[in-house]
Image (cartoon, rainbow, N blue to C red; front, side, top):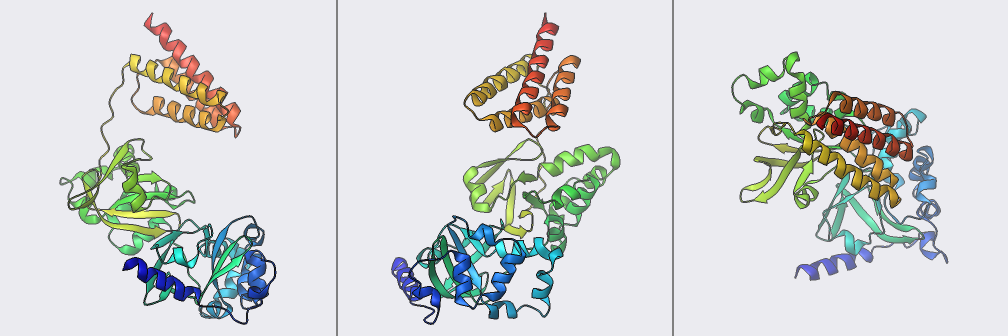
Length: 395
């Protein structure tokens, strides 16, 4: 029955056409940009694409799926909005909005009605709903579907859709339930990191979650002398990249910016991060996504690693890095070495003074170059030097 309903809905959508549109009578398909220009009803969109320097990108190979707002759709925006967005100083914001209307791949109407969301070139997701023969994209009605182009497909929508423009701290502040979290981020000097362009995923404890901690814990952590401990706790709540809930549950675990991993599970009672329950999912921010949790996550206590185990870690790292480098994966080799050196310096490994100096110097020099080959060799030399000095200390 469900498949039948979807088939009927897809068929009804496909029946919607632009009978007077010249693009439907072209003998040869044009790309998505030229197709929109020829239609004559996307003049504002075309001007916006040019102003945001996105014309070249959308004339590329693709394929792309474009949810294209008409001139009437842009006219619905508050007075002066379009003019403001077309100014040179608004180029970044305009590009974000336009990329929010584009999805990678050629997604036809029959596929659109089977999904609830889609990730856009902006990085954020649009919500898709199909009901009573009407499909909406973030609330904007799809009025024409499946306009095929040489590098993709256009679906016409009747309103401009807008991505979240607030970063993670601003989004959290807007809700009013993360005052303690934001105070902790400020005390740990992490607000700038959480406000940057690099996409992040935050498992955010509410004020009630912090209130569950033993009496006096929050006050103690907010003291300047406990900043490093607080920083490690905060980083244990942050994962690199924009990880949505269904992705997180498939992964089962996620490595945090603090280095330790979180366990992700779905069981009776809901979805959990370690033993903290997820109470709200996929809250969009301009630079990431927030998942709300009901308990503060505490990172595992760092354990001192024996010198023998540290030497074995270096041996394994060199062995893996050598294999990657010889196979031509120089970037992966440099990344592996950098991650390993960072871990050796920060994760409780027992290092001799000379070994520590070799690794610290190598990391400093490696960070100063953008060449993966140079980084690989610099870090390898640091690992070799550290290993030799530790072997000497054992004798």
